[in-house]
Image (cartoon, rainbow, N blue to C red; front, side):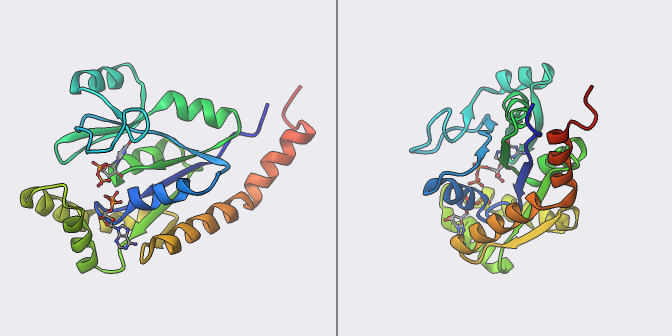
Length: 206
Ligand SMILES: Nc1nc2c(ncn2[C@@H]2O[C@H](COP(=O)(O)OP(=O)(O)O)[C@@H](O)[C@H]2O)c(=O)[nH]1
Ligand SMILES: Nc1ncnc2c1ncn2[C@@H]1O[C@H](COP(=O)(O)OP(=O)(O)O)[C@@H](O)[C@H]1O
């Protein structure tokens, strides 16, 4: 059996660029970790595809998944639910592959409790005014939603201390590079390397 994969969690305040950075990570390069597609009750935006960007589901379906213990984590965000289907994450980690989640902060804290040996990365804006610009610039929400998201973002920034790493999203390529460096270093953590050696030499196996 393979050594269990590593769970990588990218989180941070609304509008900081998590989705943009995550897409850039997977766009041009084959990675040796896979992205876990989230489930959401929000409507698809133009160009978004079910099963690629999200699993777009009704509130009833989403609630049924929660009741069936099908979610690793979930959160209500603005007016919709977002969550990580558990089965894909477990199966992939069990197969020895690393899994990458891009989720908001409440969900990340649920994962932290369940998977304490995951790697928790907090994406930060260079400053608050650029955060506001980014929330506005996205242009897909009305003013009331932008205000809601900005308020939420300020609260979310206070949660940075719960994470292992802070990555400034000044430019997307810089942020991607920093995340790559973190993942590379995390693989070299002695505890993880020891776990692999133990598997190789069969420690703990009969
Ligand atoms: N807890 C949780 N948050 C998620 C999940 N998937 C996406 N999100 C977050 O939900 C928030 C809203 O996402 P979205 O509606 O796509 O708008 P975005 O702000 O443009 O990314 C973002 O902060 C995402 O990171 C998930 O599976 N669980
Ligand atoms: N490094 C960056 N510099 C400038 N704008 C950025 C950067 N990263 C993301 N953005 C922009 O900020 C807005 C919010 O990004 P998005 O990925 O939707 O944020 P989140 O997923 O964290 O809510 C988008 O318009 C995006 O193009």
